[in-house]
Image 1 (cartoon, rainbow, N blue to C red):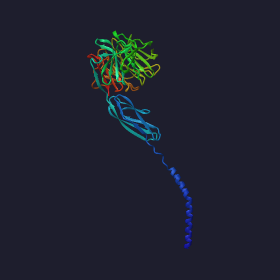
Image 2: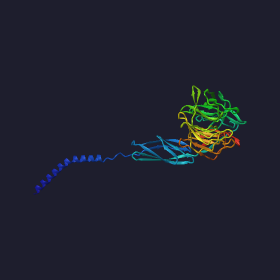
Image 3: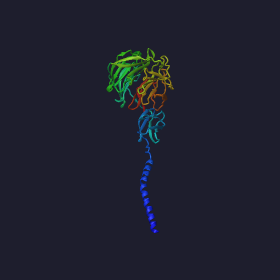
Image 4: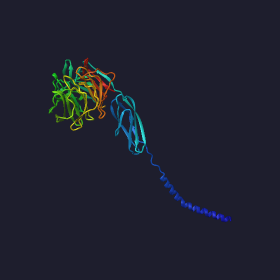
Length: 450
């Protein structure tokens, strides 16, 4: 009996072992399949955001490098949270600081990939406040007080040239002197002009050619207030002043207190409006062909009213002239109260009346165009040929954002009419000065900046 039981157990164990040997490969295969079916998807890694230090001035627009990438190659969407005006471009972050917003400001950049992974980076932007920064005055060691001078600036070489103007001793005396202003030391030095030295005159308008030491001066008024349509080329290399009278074909009529500017994108010059044989509203374009100025009048159906002594600035990046106010009459100033833009990208150019609340009208004040806004500074000017209009005004020239803002600040210099100035791109400062008021005439340059 015991032997029979042992034989039965042995048989059972033998058969079970054989079954297990056949089952192991099947179990192994099933295990492999289980391993394959249970493998997780690769981890979705969040996007990478690279953004350096940020600083911008009140009223300025600046672009900063913004690098976004995704380690898994996913598409990335950027969103921004800040009190500033901000937009993410293809590879940069553009910031604009509205007037009145100064000091440290947070900018949060949120990068979200197509599968929902998010990276957030917060940077502090130092918004520098605008202020009247310095006032430079002089006596006999610099140019006498004047109005409607022509100034040319070379910020790389750190100087500005002053050419002519109209003096006050006696009043209305046309001036033909040339002075160099050192932008760093604030010192003046007299310059002896050479070549076809132009006769004394005020209100010659300047159009500089970027990247060169060449500028052109057109029009103006001389002795007895006689207006001119002469065109001069000025080579101001090394702070010198070499003039050449340029031959012209079909030039515009003589004029003063007009606009004259250069569009580097099309290599065309433009002249507009002013006072000559009456108050003018015409627009002319000019190209240099073998050294000869060839002018064409552009008869545009929509245009500003005839005017002179207006405020203007050309935005080379947008290829757009901004024009504000100016006198529409002579016996009575009758100042315009509108703001216009001239788009010279179009063929032909197109005038557009901007739907903005312009400051009270005036003529003959300080104007400086600042491309870092982009913006046009307006200081002083007269609405009636007797008093000076109060207030410092700034025009936001960004397309679609056009706005006038009055900007009162401590340390404002005396208001005046008939002043002029320049923009120093290195220091990002506008320098405004000269001119006169009912209480004085001025030998000064006053800096607005950061």
